[in-house]
Image 1 (cartoon, one colour):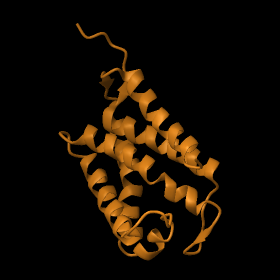
Image 2 (cartoon, rainbow, N blue to C red):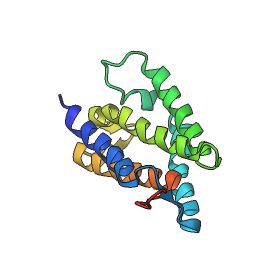
Image 3 (cartoon, rainbow, N blue to C red):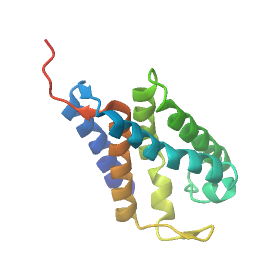
Image 4 (tube, one colour):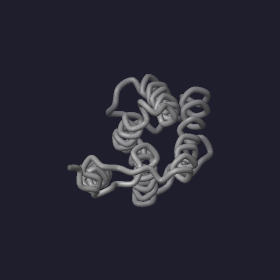
Length: 155
C-alpha cells in the first residue's frame, strides 16, 4: 500500500503527458537537444558509477521483498545506459524516453525503501521530495524524447 499512491502519481504524469499530446509532438529545436544531454548525463553517470562500480550500495536500497538485488542493480544500470544512448538515436529516441519513464516508476519502490536512510554516505531524500524529483525528471525525459505535446489537428 505504501507504494500505491506515489507510483500512481508517477503513472498519472506519464498518462497526462500522452493525453496532452494525443500522438502529436513538436520539436523545440536546440533546447530539446540540450535537454537530451541534461537528462542523459545522470543516467550515464548513475548507470556506470553507481550500478557497476558501487553495485553493492545500489543493491542495498532494493527492498528485501525483491529477489536478486545485485542482478537488479546491474540490470537497471544497463537499462539506464541503454536509455541514455537511445535518446540520441533518432529512430529510438521516443522508445528510449518512454522506457526510461517506465523504469523511473519501476525503481520507485527502492526510493521509498531508502527514504531517510544514509546509503554509502549519502542521505536519501524523503518520499515526497523524491516523488517530486522523479515527476520532474520523467516529464523532462518525455519532453527530451518526444518533444512538446501538440494539439495540432491531423487531417
